[in-house]
Image 1 (cartoon, rainbow, N blue to C red):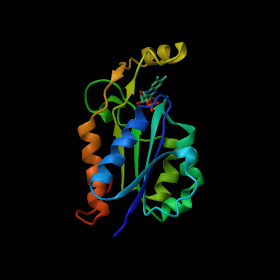
Image 2: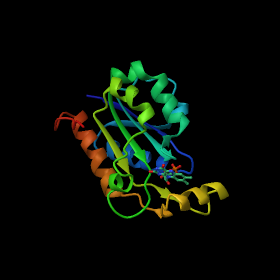
Image 3: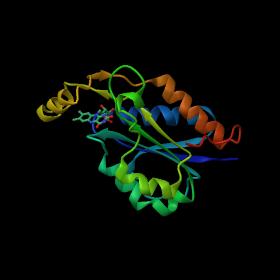
Image 4: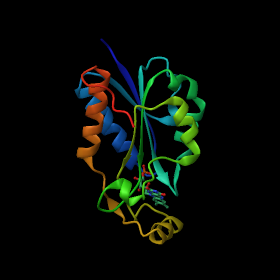
Length: 176
Ligand SMILES: Cc1cc2nc3c(=O)[nH]c(=O)nc-3n(C[C@H](O)[C@H](O)[C@H](O)COP(=O)(O)O)c2cc1C
């Protein structure tokens, strides 16, 4: 049984790409074929039975490459098993508490509802002040977000392991 999974991501500074690569690695270790690609470089969903799509979050929005991917591929995604994640909050504590319940851009929610993802996750992100421009640094200060790498590799690994198990039929896919 060959299951091919696409892990598509959109990043600005690389933190989300590394999360996508980790997810791809965990899926690969579980015996699935995982391709990890930038969302704007994906040409065809035909080879894939399942898609994991993730984006960095900037001012409550997904990167345009991930939003565009969701919009452009709605019909194909609706026929596949889909998992969604955002990489955002920096700071200690539960990521969803840090964003006061925010998990996914409201603007894209109607498309997600039509696609019906198996799960929508919010992971901690990472921001390196050395990489940010002046305006971005000011914005981070304004929203009192911490800078640093808060990515929770255990949470990411566990989530990816759950996807692998669901695709291999070991446990029912988690629903949100
Ligand atoms: C200017 C700016 C705005 C941000 N806005 C949000 C936000 O609205 N919500 C959030 O959860 N994280 C926000 N973040 C944190 C980033 O999403 C986080 O650092 C992410 O992991 C960066 O991913 P990337 O390296 O793949 O671009 C913001 C970061 C910056 C620099």
